[in-house]
Image (cartoon, rainbow, N blue to C red; front, side, top):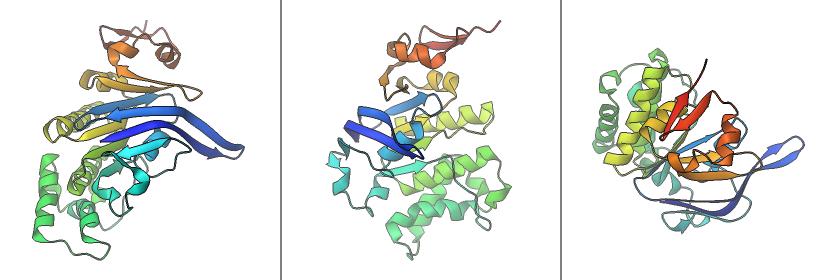
Length: 256
């Protein structure tokens, strides 16, 4: 569903452009889930915005479903990829169902009116994330965990084969974080969604998922199973401590 070939990704600084990833290649099929990890400033958000079609890349090629992204019209892109980034703001006056209904906008147009079938899709999306009883609640009344699940329902209502998340468990407590990641895994398995998400919650992510992309410094990266990257030089420099290590495919804390 998503394939990158030798792309360079950068962001702008006052001192000029900084390349955060060089000659990056990635291929994810339908139903695959990828966890993106790395230190702050390694370029996780920049890479995800690029893969989501929200930021240009300097060279190489990015394909969605075998089609170069530049050949996909912008009004078609929301039919293929939906994304959740950490800077979502809550808008006063919106109910939960109102927010989820925004996911249907790519199918109705800016001034389009939702049909009964659209509302059914929205209600099913809320049920899929366990929030159907919240549909008439104001979004400002929700906890952070509840709000993130509503945003996930909005992405489900958008009905795209690819879901991209940028640190979706930020500000969530441990039970809510585990629940949210389990929902993501369930979607990838049952609905055949291709999922990419970044997180700092390594322990939970490594328990639930197997394929990891680690972004290092100077544009370097490594992708593989947890076992494959456990002893890689980038992993050692990323952890930067003897208090955390990989053992039998699991992250072990050794804090004395």
